[in-house]
Length: 261
Ligand code: F6R
Image (spheres, rainbow, N blue to C red):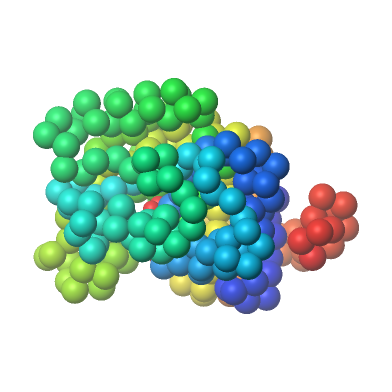
């Protein structure tokens, strides 16, 4: 695992966007795994900027999002399909037919989950998976106790996650209680993972995920098992990392990061 600490949330998001852009340029047919949420908004803003100003080309990319709420239609402003369309897909030259999210309205949710896993395999697996982290330590909606080898399935949202996302719905009572999410095993199968966390509110959970024991109680901690995972944080989210000086030293000294310094 690499941990990169940038002074501000803007610089952290900018670095993540540049890592994604580099991957897309190197392999135009990249299969991207995407995330939603407040933290990702700045990354997508930066990608749109790179598309407009530097002609970053998404025309051959395929995407698979981590999750979708059960019971929300794609045109519901709270759905993750709506989020992706408005923050990224409709602002770059991606073919919407190449963008995939689980269908939270499917009559048979289990069949939808199996089909989603199958589709990811059909496209050759995920090259680069973008991740945020919830206050409960989730990646995707893999809430505490999610099995380390879990696949795409329906999960009940934890009270911490409901509290985290309720303001977006105008109150907890208006929020769906379940979501379809890629499993921890699905995420760990991706060839590369990049997790972005910003703000002091994420400092405690980031320290547990990066430096604590691997546990099903904090699904982000399982990224310690991933052979190519980069965690990008701003100074605030890095606030409780014991090894911060060492991680900064690696970033300043490893030739791999020279172009990103
Ligand atoms: C959403 C997702 C979640 C979020 C996490 C952080 O697709 O996968 O794991 O990344 O809840 O959300 P924010 O960025 O809103 O704090």
